[in-house]
Length: 373
Image 1: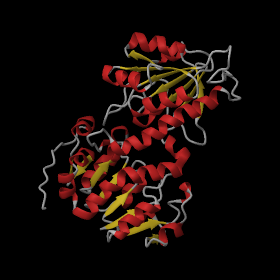
Image 2: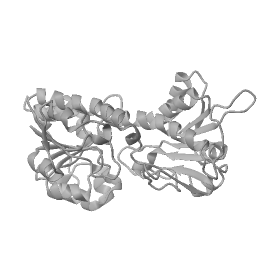
Image 3: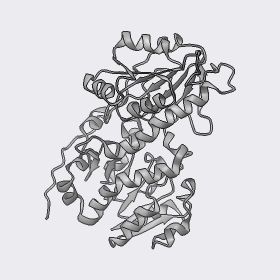
Image 4: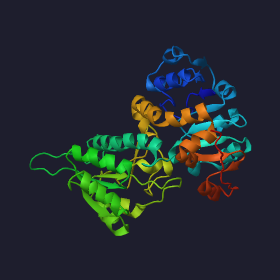
């Protein structure tokens, strides 16, 4: 198969879709890889790192798309990408179509693209590709917030997260006990913070309780407990995920107004719309703003802060699915990895994700594949 890796066009997206080790694996399997010059620079991979493995270096995104049967990306498809997408192409990416513009979805349908969203691929353990990025975001959420607590911003609380003997540690309140929330809790506990995790799912809370030997306070999430927790927080982490849907606002603006002056919000859910009413997307170069005397950090592509680690992590998680499609074809790879089908958002000229179809009022058709093995 002819596989293309374009340079990401999304502003400040530093990750590359496939690290050199992944390209080496694809080429050894007999596939041709077209790599856009400079695509690895944000992750400190040179063109030569890919060229020396046998990749063909090309010099425009247009050429990558034109020469490839399958295109591998990181960030959402942009309007610029839509100009280059070819008929019947396969695209792997964090699509996040549910928070995008309808014209992107319309283009994918019109061009009969098989669009596979990394954030929707499942296996018996959950969402394997998304998990890799969630693990990074969970760690970074605490690392970033800790720095903002001690920053030079006028409203900064000047709090040392772990405290010292005789002085209480900072309080970290995490809404959501999924991968992001669990990793954030582990990281905050390691820093010596007081940690509270809220979630609607009692089984998730039991897992947190058992994993951390009851050193973390767990609370069932509802408007009353969230309101109390928000007031207590020095750091509030929004870690809510509803698979395939826009995240609802769990924390209202009135709740934010009740927070301590100089408290920090990190809304990790911002890439799905955000779970805090006062959140709006920010960028790596301008990551924060202050509203109601609360510092907000809402960067959708937070893993790009550690782009090299993130690119390796993404490659490790996604490569089996890329190989499956490239080596055996879509139908056969789905027969072996049924969870891959959950990631297919458009196929053969129609929308194959029911939630997405309802959101944008387009025709939905369920996919039926028959293995040729």
